[in-house]
Image (cartoon, rainbow, N blue to C red; front, side):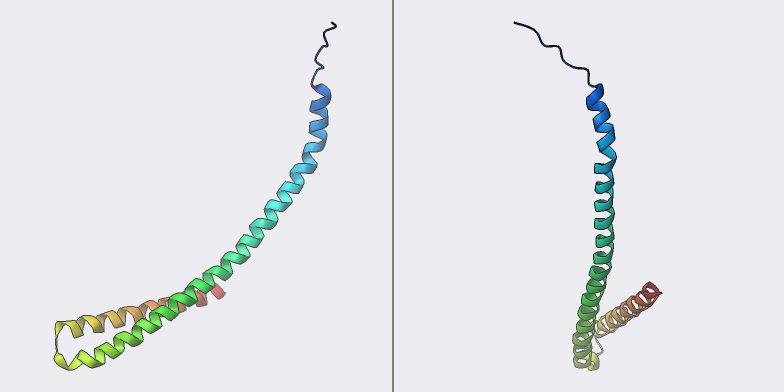
Length: 105
């Protein structure tokens, strides 16, 4: 039996060096494209989340306003706390609106 000698890896190494940039370039292009898509999708997603938060806060203000109208004549501590909570949510909605205007510029 004749022993076969393992060839030196220089040829394989040169071939890998020649083909590696083309594979890497395609990978970088794909990565760049996916990053751009994520950036565009994240902007749309953040707008949808802010829209949902505004709806929830608006409904909360309406319900709390109705509850305040119902209990305001009682002069209780609950009426004072409810009024302060309504003001807090209104300030929160104002801050969201200001943040949206800043984000649009």
